[in-house]
Length: 205
Image (cartoon, rainbow, N blue to C red; front, side, top):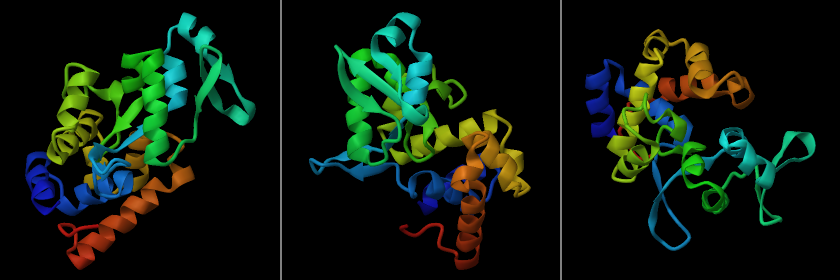
């Protein structure tokens, strides 16, 4: 990750340790994982609440019901296929593939991708013409993933918060108003301080 972080640090005028800290918190510092078949696969987070929100009314009425305690349940031909709060990559990919059977494009728009976990519907600010262009690029390598993340950060005027180390303002803009629930601001701060102190941002995590 050292060369990747250093290259993007020059492009975006940000410390490489800070870039690495954000990637570490978002995806444990890796945009790919070895899947259940021994193949390299991009890390994702499928978001059923966004999938439901983006569906047109006809598909929403046909495939969606609101569960208990705010959960979102999706059905195909009356068969329950997925709900929110999936957490492991096998379950994430299973849910994503099933959602593609309902609406292929919206399933991609409703999923976060790679090192920076950039949501598909943010493809334009990430520097792409379509969500599929973004996913195709992200599947090539981690540099494309990280540059898309940095384009998103820059395009949403969040670089200033990283430069001034206002982790709370950055996390709110990057992760949403619920960032405190997952301590994104504290985790980025701690990761940056550790990497800065130990000089380990270029080493394997």
